[in-house]
Amino acid sequence: MILDHGGGWTTLITNLEDIAVPVGRTIPMGARLGRTQRRSSRVTVELRRGGRPVPIAPLLLG
Image (tube, rainbow, N blue to C red; front, side, top):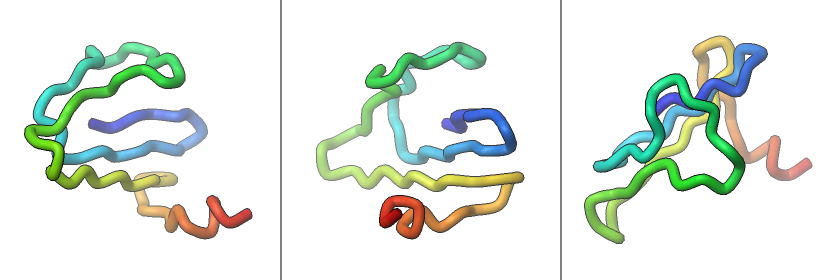
């Protein structure tokens, strides 16, 4: 799943078995995006700007 935040910012989310949001739909904050196959499944989230990965940790730290 790729979420488009506008301004060249996107988020890539992988390993969802079921996607709950139709393509092109605006997603309200807190909405369920999908689900994994099992509780132990690993979901990957990657923030991107201009199609290139951006390290998330420095953004969270301040």
